[in-house]
Amino acid sequence: MHDDLSSDPAGDAVGDAPGARAVPWWQTATGYQVYPRSFCDSDGDGIGDIPGITSKLDHLADLGIGFIWLSPVYASPMADNGYDIADYRAIAPEFGTLDDFDRLVAEAKARGIGIVMDLVVNHSSSEHAWFRSACQGRDAPFHDYYIWRDPAPDGGPPDGRRAAFGGSAWSFVAEVGQYYLHLFSPAQPDLNWQNPGLRAEIWDMMRWWLARGIAGFRMDVISLIGKDVDGGIDEEGPYLHGFLQEMHREVLAGRDLVSIGESWSVSPETALMYCGRDRHELDMVFQFAHVKEGWDPVHGKFRPKPFDLVAFKRVMFDWQAVMTNDGWNSLFLTNHDLPRQVSKYGDDGEYRVRSAKALATLLHLMKGTPFVYQGEEIGMTNATFTAISQFRDLEILGHHAESVAAGMSEAEFIAGANVNGRDNTRTPMQWTDAPGAGFTAGTPWIDINDNHVRINVAADRADPDGVFAHYRRLIALRREKRVISHGALTPWHEPHPQVMVYTRDLDGERVTMIANVSGEEVRFAPDPALVAQGVCLVHNVAPRDAVTSDLALAPWEAFALLSRADGTTPLAA
Ligand code: GLC
Image (cartoon, rainbow, N blue to C red; front, side):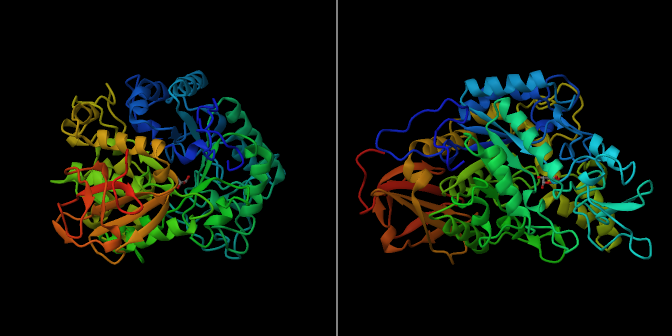
């Protein structure tokens, strides 16, 4: 939190260099998201598990990350792969035991890595004991932990709200004679945050996990908890910030942890309400404006739009500007709900390695905390499924029927799911070229991408010019160079349709990042104020020791130059 100043996610506070302003550890750290089901299967059941994650910690320590965001490992019927929790204080048997979890925390800590838990509290699973009780009748003990409304006069749902995974957001329970609200699937009933008893349970549960030594929370769809059901406001409702401030007071304050809230609706106008330093709510938010740029405004994600660099830059730079003096950005292109970035924004063919590095460079040198999604560090690509039977995600399956009924062809829907669907990032981590990709000795729960014979951790790490080596360099730069973690960002050449340029400045040092975000060679004349001599910090084609007034950038070339603010070479990089 902002009020806790130390520099070690694993909890052993380390002082900052004398004279330097202490900064929270998560401002110089890089996060890494593990999707447990698909990371590493230690027991051959085809499903990744916690001992599997522990067995791969050295890979992550070598990469240099500061913390793992662990997607849910709680007991769950797995309707939404764990984003439907049946017991907030138990581990799903397919993932292991609490002992396995404690061992993961300890082993990670020994490597300087914190474990950040996914906190999924907008809704529980319909299998949670609270919900089972709630369905027994209006006087049942936990009835009011959920959101119930009477049927409309015709007996139908109370209103026309749609669920994110298809269908109405209301389901009827005959024993109660009412409908319950579920903004995702019927298996994910929304919790009633108006109930102070529920909130107290959640604060208690959070403290219970913190006592196990975790480094913080990533908060699933947190901007939905303050909804005004009858007013029809779900996102960023009137109670949201009061609840987050209560959470801060009750749980987060005074602890050395990181808190990251997911919000699909947060805008530059509302961002600082979550993470402004005087708000006492969260450290940062995951925002999705850059992601939504890639969706059709009417038909959504299953009808993708081509990548538009100018729009992308506008969004990213707007967010940088908002956080110039307050708040903090999260930086990511991929997560378990999004396509693989090298396929979505880069080139997963001829220039796969180079474009993967270019995207990493342009993202990691901005101000904020970067997040790497498992497999991104070796340039893993989207899957190309050909039949609906290969998909596992309930969002894809839920929308399939609706989209086809609305006139979209099967082929167009599958093509859209291959571009923007959530199963792309959920295919197993590719460790080796072996038949189970080093992920499993059994039958994987979802198909492994055939390209694991070429694209895998063993092959990439054996290559000094591999994607992994590039990520390792970027992650180390953020830890080591204050101009990268904290320098002021200035955008340049914003209207240029192929090139992304920004500078970072701090204490007389300047980093200039230039990336050709296209598969063509680009002749580019940088603004005279950018012309400089310097030291190349990172590159993906060949080192450069200057920004000259006329640059010939190779396809997907990206580099960063460290210079003095006056354009001369620094004494030491
Ligand atoms: C978040 C999660 C997503 C999940 C949804 C409902 O957006 O990232 O995977 O399906 O919330 O919990």
